[in-house]
Amino acid sequence: MFDSPGKLALGLLSGILFGFLLQKGRVTKYDVIVKQFLLRDFTVLKIMLTAIVVGGVGIAAFHSAGWVHLHIKPALLGGTILGGLIFGAGMALLGYCPGTAVGAAAEGGRHACPGILGMLAGTAVYAEFHGFFSRTLLKAVDLGKATLPSLTGIGAGWWLAGLAAASCGIFILLERRERSGSRPPEQAPSIRVPTPAGSSRQGGDP
Amino acid sequence: MKWLTMKSWSPYVIGAGIGLLTWFTLLTVDTPLGVSTTFVRAVGSLEKSVAPDHVAQNPYLSKHGPKLDWQALLVLGVFLGAFLSAWWSGDRSKEKVPALWERRFGPGVARRYVAAFVGGFLILFGARLADGCTSGHGISGSLQLALSSWTFFIALFAAGVATAFALFRKERGNV
Image (tube, rainbow over all chains, first blue to last red):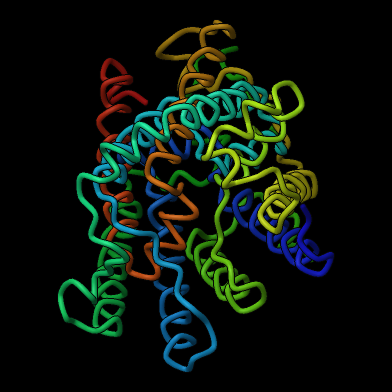
């Protein structure tokens, strides 16, 4: 029923760091997430790509040194694709993902709470249908624990180097565009949006 | 300690920090960063208190049994960490209806809460169908170059962009 106290303490510590970073990264804010999907603010993509490159390089190195195991989720692509599509639609509607909704609730965002209740309801309903899905959609395409290196025969190092180069290119283009003035960097909430008088319900800034 | 009270850090610093955190969780407890399995354990615990037989007969809920585990504490930690960050920087909010939503759909709180509930429902239904969320697939899986995770990441973004453009098409260009 319980992990060891040491493991629980490590979970708590990791979570505090994660939540702190998510809030400082402003991805606990509805506007930042939804404007990513509207392609007006690329904070989410910048954070995720940087995390993937930094995390990926380290973990590939640790793995080749034999220090860590990889944890690859099986490629049951029917479920992954339909699940990803449903997830994306829900994320655009709520403006948070599971982790950032918890962070948004901690920040004080009231509407994150019905979002989290909806998440519990979605989980409960899914649990009733898991048997059905595992007999049908999840069986449709099963490529096992496939990875991009295992599929292509190109080593993880090359994939990560390519990903790092592509990310840097994307970041340079984004920064250049944001600096050019046509799309101001959406960093300072108080000056970001010309809001009609009285319509902002966000607390915080004077 | 001025950096602790800043309202935001560079997204590249945040991303690098999360990347280092994925090293830390794999090295310390051999577990990738993830959030959404905790929702299954929470639902299992809630249902167990009202209908224990139902939970026992449901293989999915029994497989992810009610358990106080590393990830549950991680989720609690996310709450505490985000609270501390917002509190120290004076970035606490009482947002009920986000400004962007209000300009498109009006100030109604009930409408926003229903939309948030439906959004949350879809998110976890999708996450369980895909076996992961933005953390477990989007970050942890993608950085291990898993095919499943990159497929999820691309599907998520495609549907997110399509949904956001459909929701806010009348707003386009003036937000």
